[in-house]
Amino acid sequence: MKHLIPEFDRMRRRYPAEATSSLVLPCLRRIQESRGYVADEDIAELTAYLGVHRIQIEEVLAHYTQFRRAPIGQWHLQACRNLSCSMRGAERVIEHLCHKLHVQPGQTTADGRYTLSTVECLGSCGTAPVLMLNDAYLENMDTAQLDALIEGLPT
Ligand code: FES
Image 1 (tube, rainbow, N blue to C red):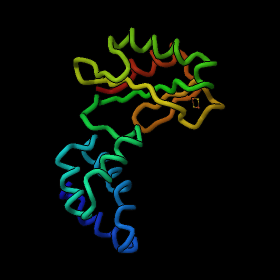
Image 2: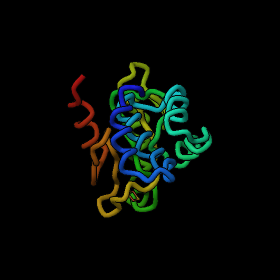
Image 3: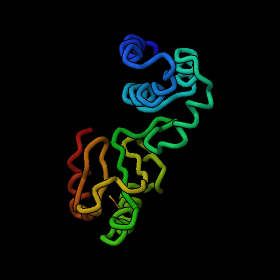
């Protein structure tokens, strides 16, 4: 996290001194972008840097499911399983991915290439079923499209 301190310092100048805890969320976001997940040592360092209680950071990590506490695969597939996506075949898509990748939701393939997660609404219900591949939205997906996409991913 130390390499992010200059960036955090710049952010901090934009926040009132009494609102330091409001920096927890954007700092965690940058840590995850940098490392790929938020490690225990990041929490300790951010606690010291911001001067907040560790529980304030843990609460944010627990509330926002997009934060990861462990490394994930090179390609992170997040499949929405909420109502609109379910009505348009999300379960079939998720089951297909489990079978294809030999993982259950929440697991990473043995080669470290793919992580499959299920998530709640991704906010694009009109294009259900929806998944995310890393930061990209995949909309109106079916199993054939997913197969072609996965097979075309670079190593
Ligand atoms: S229910 Fe899947 S994106 Fe909203």
